Image (cartoon, rainbow, N blue to C red):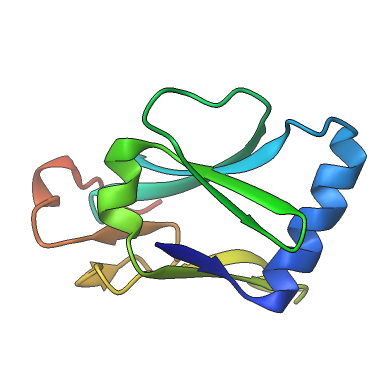
Amino acid sequence: MLTLTPAAKAQVQKLLQRADNPNTALRVFVSPGGCSGMSYGMQLDDQEQEGDTLIQEDGVRVVVDEMSAMYLAGSQIDYSNALMGGGFQVQNPNAVKSCACGHSFDTGKDAATARVCH
């Protein structure tokens, strides 16, 4: 469903270690908005919700809610420590276009929620 590169796994492991709670996972989600129609989001979360998919690999826990899973199927999360454009990036095979910022995407059905880039 969703994979992490070794660089992303290493960064998530660091974040989870700082959280110091064995129930904490990286929650990856999408929400309406952004300049292409849908936006990616990530946060640490220690509460699994009904319908969540839990992905565990090499000590890294990732959860994805049911709605977001439809948009993220087959995606890969990478991490770059670059000064410009660094951070987590989502490579999503379901996106037909994305914003230059890389935080917003369109699957071809999301144009109604698109907003102007700032």
